[in-house]
Length: 190
Ligand code: ZN
Image (cartoon, rainbow, N blue to C red):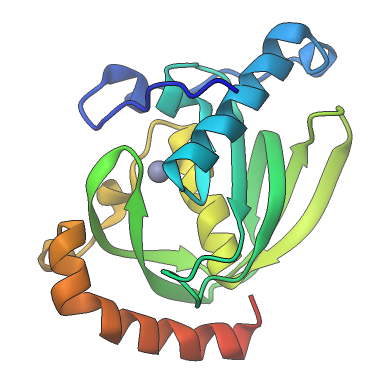
């Protein structure tokens, strides 16, 4: 198991547009090792996702996984997903405001995300996927794909008054957010 250091906001690599992975390189030992490192580091940090730029690698690879988390019971599960060269297309104009955090940013804040998206990506076996994602899961995809374009969630925070440290989020904002988002998840189903 290899846990890599996670870069914090201010590190220049978090602001680069990462390079596509040539499909014939996906099976290479270097790319497969990077994928393993991303998974190990995401799990160690207890994150819902991690992009390669966050561990100082300029390749378009992100991993996502949400298991049972008693701290965030409202979060729908995401099976372990490796997204290589992911491309997102919104399906319609429906949006939702999600309070987001990030392993590279020591704050949380409200971000507007598309509710229904189509995603194209390759997995670690080189298989191409074309899938529909909805709700909070779609939000996680948008957050991770933003990283591959050098975009952090705080760039999308339209109301800076929603910014909060984790401690103050827990104290003052968590309950209201959980109540609102639980209703949303029940309606959207993911
Ligand atoms: Zn992030």
